[in-house]
Length: 124
Image (cartoon, rainbow, N blue to C red):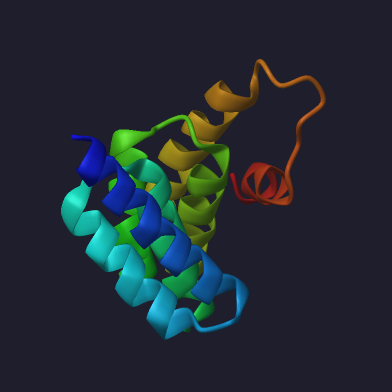
């Protein structure tokens, strides 16, 4: 178990360093390797979604963000990204569901009103 945890930390560090250096493809490769060890890690899935989006692959980003949301439905950044994706993809029925989730998640956050929240309020 300790060896597996150590291996995960090494893979994460390699992915993170490559991301910080702007080596997106290498970072993606390392995160995918890490995902093979921890396939339900919402944070790794979110990072992969972010990297794929930054790399110009919104379809793959959607895949990773959706999986991340499945394992951590309370992550506001993921919910906002999905809402933005649904708006840009003109999936109106999904926008309402995403707005509902976002509003329920932000109720406890005093004064939080992200840019997507405002956009979703205007769209609805």
